[in-house]
Image (cartoon, rainbow, N blue to C red; front, side, top):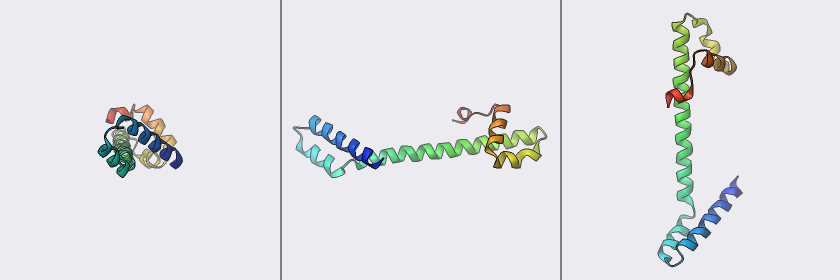
Length: 102
C-alpha cells in the first residue's frame, strides 16, 4: 500500500511538473510539500468517514434498542447489543437502515 502511495505521489509530481513547467516558484513549493497536502486531505476524509460511520452505528443501535423496548422485547436488548448477526436481522425487521441517519 505504501509503495502504491509513493508511486501515486511520484506520478502527481510528474504531472504537476508538466503543468507548471514555466513556473519555477510553484514547482519548488510543490516539491517542498512532497505530496503531504494530498496525504493530509485523504487522512481527513478517512477520519471524517470513520466518525460518520460510528455516529450512524450509534444512532442505529439506539433506535433499535428503543424499538425493542417499545415493542415489549426488552429481554432481547443485550443480545442485540452483543450479537451482530442478531442485530442485523432486527435492523431488517424494524427497517433500520444507515441511509436513514445520514
